[in-house]
Image 1 (tube, rainbow, N blue to C red):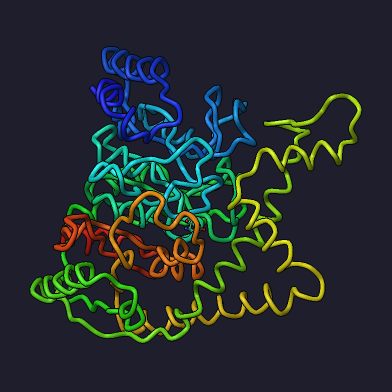
Image 2: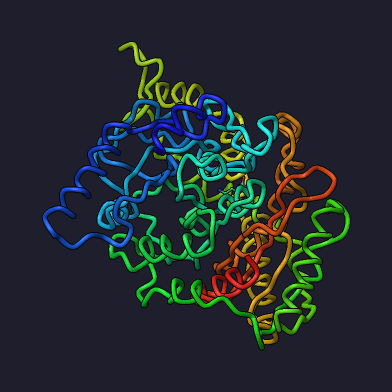
Length: 451
Ligand code: GLN
C-alpha cells in the first residue's frame, strides 16, 4: 500500500531519491515467511520506513543529496540500517536531503527540492525534508533523520510530524556520512510520539564501531510514551526563545501549549539562558570547521564522482576538478569558512572562541536543569516558508535553526511535535521539548501528555 501511495504522489512531493521497490517487497515477504514458520519476529516486523539518504545501505545507492556520490553503491550497511533490518523493518527507499545535511529547506539537494505536503510551494524543512514529507504525505509511517543543528526537529515542525534528536551518542554514527561529527545525531521521525518511541528503541544502543557511542542502557522511551504525564513536573520556558523574528501565530500556539502543560499539572518556570544568543554564531564556526575536515575524504580517487581524469592530469588536479563539479554552493561555502576558521593564526579567534561559547551554552543548560525537568520552546521561529524565498540569503536560512542549535552544541536530547496550525497561514507549528542528556524518556512522557 505504501509503495502504491509513493507511486501516486511522489512525483509531486519528491520525498524519495530512490525507491527500492524490489528490495522492500522482498523484505516484506521474508517477514511473512518468518511468521508462517513460527519464527520470532523483530519488534517492528513488516513496518515500512523511509531512510534518509545519509545512511549507507548495502547494494542501494547512497548520495547524501550530493553529485559527488552519484551512482555510488555502498558495500556495507550503517549500524542503523543493520538494526532496522534486524528489527524486520521494511526499508522503502532513501529520502531527499540538503547536500551533506547542510541546509534547512532541502533546496540544497543536488537532485531538486522536495515539496511540503501541506502546500507544495512551501519547503518541508531540512536537511531531512524528504523524510518528514514522506510521513506527512502518508508515503511511510516511520522515517529516519539526522540532526546536526535541527535537521530532524525543524522538518518535523513545518510538516506537522514528530521528530526526536536523541542524546548525542545514543544512535550509532557508523555508516552515517559525517557532516559535523561532534554534533551529528541520528534519530526517529514519525506521526505520533509512541511511533517515534518504538523506532527510538530499535535504533539506539551501544555500538563498538562508533567511538562516541554511549555504553549505557537505552532510556525507557516506549514505557514513557505509553504513560504520558506532566503532573508535578517542572517545565522551563526559555526566556531567549521569543521576540523579534518570531511569527505571531507560532508564539500563540506555543503559549497555548504552555497553558495546556499548566492545566495538566506542570509547574511553569521561566529559565534564563543568556549564552543561547551566541549559539548560532558558534554553530556556524564549529559545524563548517568539522565539515571542512570530514569532507576532505571526497577526493575523486577513492569512490564516487571522478571528474577530468583524461590520463594527462595529476591526482591533485583531478581532485580539484572533482570537488569543483561535485559539491554544490552551500557545501563549498562551508568548506571555505571552516578551512579559514581552522587556519593557523585564526584558530584561536574563531574555532577556539566558538568552543568556549559551546561550554557556556552547556553550563546554561546545566543551570536550567537544576530548576526544571524539561524545557520547552517553539521548534522554529516561523512556519514553512516558500521554496525559493530564502535560497539566496544564507543568513535568513540559518535563522530557521535558532531554537534547535543549542541542544546540539550541548549534546542533550530534544523532540518536536505538532501543536496546532498557525492562524495566519494554516501551516503546522512545532513545540520543542528539551531534556537533559540521557533523560530522553522525559521527552516522550511530556510529548505523549500534550500530543
Ligand atoms: N540547518 C542547519 C545547517 O544547515 C542544520 C542542519 C542539520 O541539522 N543537519 O547546518
